[in-house]
Image (cartoon, rainbow, N blue to C red; front, side, top):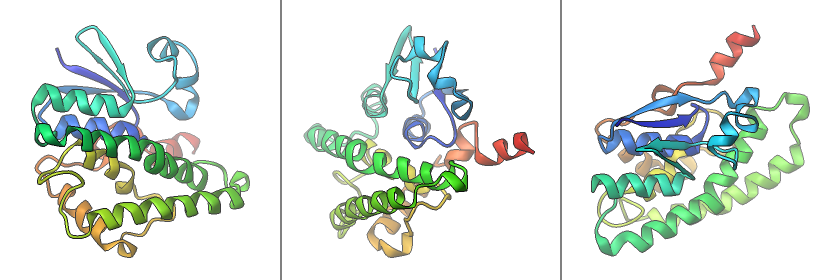
Length: 214
């Protein structure tokens, strides 16, 4: 059975799962979630995931939520993107760090800077968020200095988790040129066979909403 990923293009957490399945050769199809028109806050989505979040994976009669868990499920089922057995704890450590300290900061900052009307963008909150984001970027930059991948000797789901939001084009206070180790690491990921930009991999992008508004 082909897995169904409930997702939308602007969602960096959805991109983690979509990219992992694509790189691992895992059969899947996207199901568009109209987040910006409130689909995650009402039925039928809330019956699927009471947490009201994307992504949601439907497969073999199961519903799986939270991107980190979906990533590990894909890696275990395919035997790919999970390094060696000795890497598992370290992979989980970086996935948890990313969701708590990194992607969470990027997602909020990017939303406030790009998806709110300009008159509603809170400058002080954005500046505070960007400060926290710079601290997280320094952690990742220092970790990647002198190494190719976040964990082990090859790409794993830890890389895909930490990198997802950094491939988006909307500004949120991140310039690749400021972080050379991260910049080289993102190039390595983008060079993997099958890599695709989030807006090419999942339905839904800002330009679609711009056409609707017009």
